[in-house]
Image (cartoon, rainbow, N blue to C red; front, side):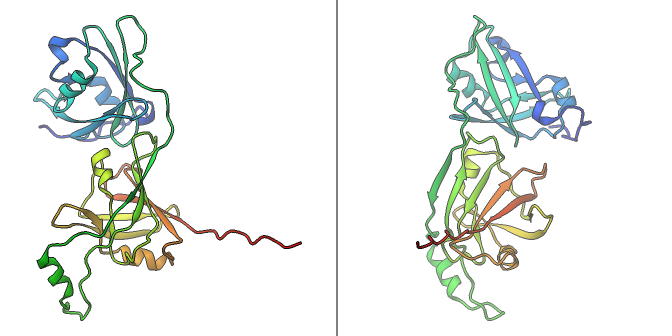
Length: 278
């Protein structure tokens, strides 16, 4: 695949959209993204994007391949989208960029009317996920019991209860943790963010709050594939004087046009006011 360099920023990503007329002989296996859309798009095109309907009820992870002529195609995953919607000759598809490398897709039939397979609900939906502590293999448990060179006991990642954004949200992918367990050193990134969203993490990332304060953190992966925020997270907790389980934190990915930035917001617990007695 050729280089995916940044293009000249001309059109805001919030306004970016393109359309295609479906031709089965040309578009059943792959779909070319209009070259002008690539030229004027304000973001780098990733190797994978998400296609979803207006409500985000169902999603398709689709690869973006570039040929020798520099043309970009929706490829792996696209045939499943075509099959699911039973696209036919002459149907009209509109792809609207919807943040974080995903596209809302509207389909219009040959009668010129929008297909009624999509609902009109744009509400934000969150899923509350109870995440249990990881069931480590015997060798990992033994290793956790051993003393390290510094005299401190090695601790496996601790996990907590979270709220995870689903496809109905217009925001970038996020999760909210209320830190109910003693996750002083590590915090699990819920698997739903990787299954439902096109979330990408780096081995070393930066958590940044609204005031511009930053914390360098490392992203770890356990033996069974769970991903968590590791080294550096404890300093973030200390600096913000977080009080579990009362205080909660919101972690947002892809909000600042960088895969290395995690935008973080502390949601302080506000105790209820005591009722005054007459």
